[in-house]
Length: 381
Image (cartoon, rainbow, N blue to C red):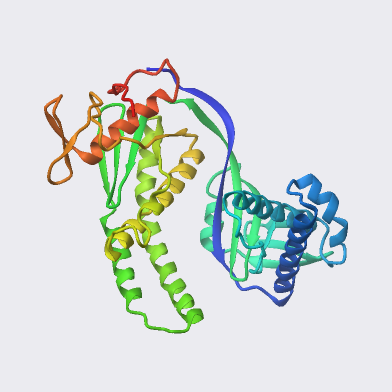
C-alpha cells in the first residue's frame, strides 16, 4: 500500500445567517445590482468576458455611483461570471435570455472587517460604515479553529454569508480508498479494507414525498402566488432534507479522515433528462426520482473532504451496478435488490456491488503503484 504524501493547500468554507438591513444598506445593495447590470450591458455590447477587458471598458463608466471604488471591481468580477455562463449557454442553444440581475445583492472581498469577533463592519459610502451583529453560530464557526482567514462577504436583503479559509495539509496519495454509491434511500460505502457500510436516507425520501403530496393539492390560479407558496414549502423541505444529508456526509468524511482514505464517487450526468414529462413514466415515479439529492450529497462530501485535506476523485458511472465487482461479468437482478453473477455463482447486494466497483475504479485513478482492490476485468462497451 502506498505511503501517504502530504501537500499544503488552501480550503474554503462559508457560514450563513439572517440579518435585518438598514435603509443605507438597501441603497448600497441596489447600487451594486445596478453596477453589475451596467457591466453586463457593456460586456454584451463590446463582446468581452475576461476580467481585464471588462475592467478596461467598464471601470470608469461606474464612477457616477457614490460608492467606494473597490465595489466597482467586485461588480465587474460578478458580471464576468454572468457573462461567461451566458456565453456557455448560448453555444448550446440559441434562445437564451439576456442576463439581468434582479435581486438586491452585494459580494465583496474589500471594505469590511470583523470587529472583536462579534460584528461585521461594512463600508456603505466613503468613510461611512454599517455594523451587522453576528449571531452565536457565526461567531462559534469563525472562532472554532485557529488560523482562519475571512475572505469575502455576500449580502442579500435578508442573509449574510461570510467566506473563510485555512491552510491544510492535503493528502495527495492516501493510505487507502473509500468508494461511495449514492442511492435514493441510502448511501453505501465500501473501503479498501473490505468494510461495507450503509447509511440510511429513507427519512429524507419520506419528507420529499410528503411535501410533493402537499403541493399537489394547491389550487391557486395566480401564478405569482403559487410560485411564492411553492418556494416557501420548497425551502422548508430543503432545510429538513439537507440536515439529514449533512449528518450522513459528516460521518462518511469523518471515517475517511480517521483512516486516511481518499474518496471515490461516480460522475453522474444526464439523470434529469431520463425522467422528463412525456418519457413514459408516471407522475409519482418521476417526482420520486427527480427528487433524488445526488448533487447535494456530492457537494457536501466534496467540500467537507477538501476542508480535511482528503482527495476526491470521480469515476465513470457506466456498469457500476450491473457488472460483477469481482470478475466484471454482467449480473442478473434478483428480488430485494440482489444481483446474481453466473460466473462467480454468488449473489450480492446491488448497492454494495456498485460501491465496490467505484472503489476499484477509483484506485486506478491514483496511479499504477496503487494496490489492486478487487480489480475488475476490463469490459468493452
